[in-house]
Amino acid sequence: MNDETSLYPPLAEIGLGNYAPYLMNRIMGRYNASLRAEMADLGLTTPKMRALAVLSVQDGPLVGELSLLTVVEQSTLSRALDQLQAGGMIRREADAADSRAVRVFVTDAGRACFETLWPHMAAAQARMFRGVPEDERRAFVGTLQKMLANIRRQGS
Amino acid sequence: MNDETSLYPPLAEIGLGNYAPYLMNRIMGRYNASLRAEMADLGLTTPKMRALAVLSVQDGPLVGELSLLTVVEQSTLSRALDQLQAGGMIRREADAADSRAVRVFVTDAGRACFETLWPHMAAAQARMFRGVPEDERRAFVGTLQKMLANIRRQGS
Image (tube, one colour):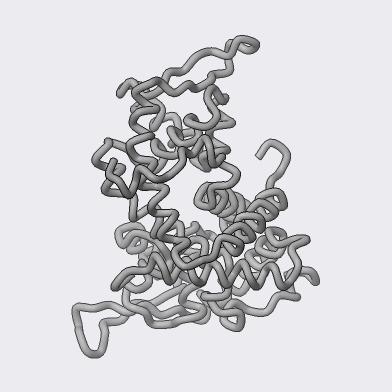
C-alpha cells in the first residue's frame, strides 16, 4: 500500500450500496439475466448478442475493435463469431489494406435476428429507468460518458 | 414484436454511446481489466475478489445470497469458494437453523488479502470519476440505487 492508495476509506465504511462499481455490476447482472430467455430463443449468448448489437450500429470493424467494443475477450469472441457465421448471421473478410487483418460484417439474417431481440433489450433498459425523470436520465448517461472517457486508454 | 416492444427506436438511431447498458458494460470491462494484475498478484480472480469484497462488508451470508450479491453463478462461485477455502481465506459452516444451508465466513487472512486489494479498487473507482464534481457523483450513485431497486426481483 503506498501513500496514494492508503487514502481511501474501507469498503465497509462506504457500504456496498454506495460503491458505484458494485451497483453497476448488480444492475448489469439483472439486465443480462432478464434477456437470457429471449437470447436463448434466438440461439444467442451474451457474446453473440453483443457482437450483433455493435455490428448493427458499426458494420465492418476489425476483430480486435469488435472485441474492445463488445468487452468480450478475443478467444471467446472468435468462438462466438464462428457460431454466428455458421448460422449465416455474419461474414468475415480480409481487410483491403492488410490481408492479415479480418473485418466482420453483419448479414441480413444477423440484422433481422438482432432486430427481433432489440425491443426486449430496450424494454429491459426502460424497466431499469422506471420512475427516473428524463433530465435525471440524461444526466446519468452524461456521467457515464465522462467515466468512459476517463478510463479509456490508447487503443482501448 | 408486440405493441409494447415496437415502440422503441432502433439502437442505430440511439447510438451505442447513448445506450446506458452499453456504456456501463464498457466501463465495468475497463474497471475489471485495470485490477487484473493486482488480483493475479494476490492469486485472485474476479469471482474470488467479489466474494471477499462482499464478505468484508456482510460476513456469514448463505451461499445463494453470496451468489446474488456477487453476481457470480452458483457453480462458478462454488469453485471460487473451494479455492479461497484451500488458501485459508474463507470457511463454510452449516447454518444453525437449517443444516443443509451453508454460510460463508471470511477469515483474518481473507480480510487481510482484500485489504491489500481494496486501495487498488478504490483508486480504479476514483479514476473513473476523475473530473466529475462531488454533487454529480452523488446524483449518479442515487440514480444507480433507483435502477437497482427497479430491476430487483423477489429473492434477487
